[in-house]
Amino acid sequence: MPPIADLHDSLQDLSELINRRLVITDEWLRVVAYSIHESELDRARLSIVLAHSDSWHVPPAGAGPQLQEVAGIGPVLFTPLRDHRHRVGFLLLALDPDEGVLPSATVATLAEHAGELGLLLSLRTLYAERDRHRVRALLDSLLGSDSAARDSAAAALVEEEMLGAARQYSAVALGPDPRDPAHDPAQADAIARLAVEATIDFVGRTSTASVAGAGIGGGLGILVFPRPVVAERLARILEEEYAGVRAGLGPLVGDLTEVGGSFRRARDAWRVGVATGAEARVLAWSDLGLDRLLVRLPLDELTLDDLPPPVRTLLSAGLGTEVLGTLEEYLAHGGDAAATARALHVHRSTLYYRLDRVRAVTGVDLADGRIRRELHTGLRIAELAGIIPC
Image 1 (spheres, rainbow, N blue to C red):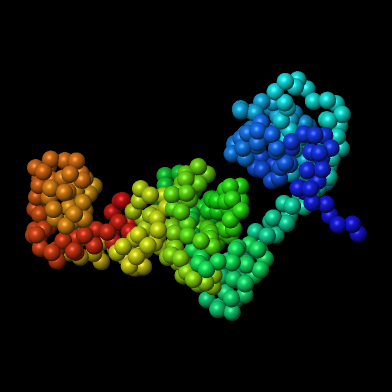
Image 2: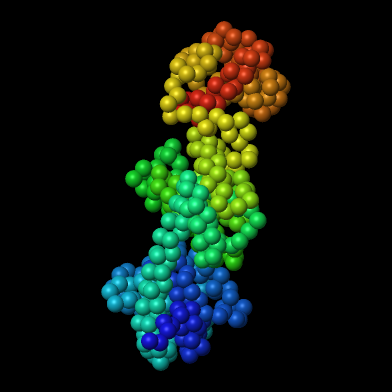
């Protein structure tokens, strides 16, 4: 039985045959393969395709080859690729600037090879789905409590080239923010999985670095990197792809079998970001400070009655977020009124007025270090537990 042809090689053979630069996308116009692009014009066109093709209009189902005007490129011929039953993607060919229509011989050659490319693309999609299931199973084992299973999973991830061998690894927990007004609990798992896939796709399109990931349920996904994660870059990816998704970064660990610990701390960082509405879309566990401990409390079980008396009295008085925010800022600045007023951009008399309201309601002395500690920690716990809005 002859070996199965390779999608990339078959595409390059067709490109050489018709002397045209070609791109293959999946059904959603995400780039899967492309031929060699040598000229400056060809490379400029390819960069536009790689960056923007998944935002283009998808031709309707059942349509044949058709020209579309694409910004920055000009006319592009979209030839549908099908397996035996379904459309599985497209073959893209950009027309030259001075070209009105494609020669009929070129169109005929494209049509002749579209069937083989469609079958190869379909086969590649099946393999990709198999690989996704394989990665998910290995990551499940890596996060589990069975040490033998963790050892086996870690070895398989490296040996099967799903992750590179490295001296250190880190995990990312990511998922939609349940407090986002647009959040749909029924879609949380799907969004987490898509955010994982979008990040992996970005890494694959922009580098040769390795990363493994999967959706793991509970509205969360995991990414494992054989290197430190750049929080700013991950935030940009999420902002572009999935604006309602937050992420937490776990600490570096020295062995892949230990990545479960990194993920648990990454999940804690994600929980802090969600609970407090942190401005940063990506939070690192290493930057959490006292929240490292507070987030490990049974926050879902805490009520107003569990908080220290001054905090309970304060929250029961209904003073509003402005006064509470002022108090938190004052406590965060160690009771320094001048620094607090500068941070809040208010006059010092306004600050004193709000603090006097706190004193009147609680009857406590804000100069007492013990009271300040109870208020500061208690208010933070109340935020993390959702007892007060962030």
